[in-house]
Image 1: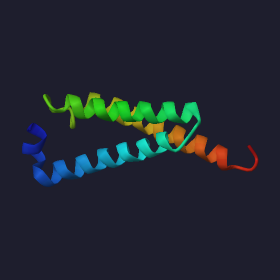
Image 2 (image 1 turned 120 degrees about the vertical axis):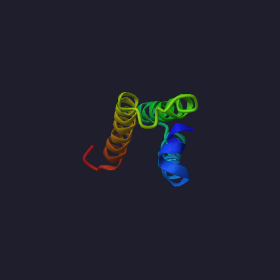
Image 3 (image 1 turned 30 degrees about the vertical axis):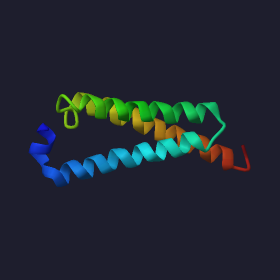
Image 4 (image 1 turned 45 degrees about the horizontal axis):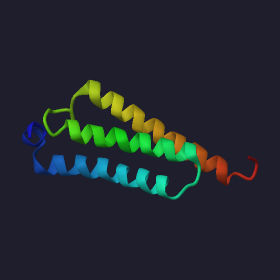
Length: 94
């Protein structure tokens, strides 16, 4: 509610759209592979996003620097690992 009060409906909608689109991307990555490491990276990213959204129901964690630093880093690492593993799988040299 505090983030909604600070940014308005438009700001909250954009932020939720961002996190939900990342959640959807990670879900598709987990569902479309048989590679356990890729699936693990996807689940780690999804768990981080779900944790952020769950914590944000009671406190203003969507703009808390300490929480956002951890969540952004873990989701970023998951996306980087997914991209690296997918690129290695498609590379003819690997």
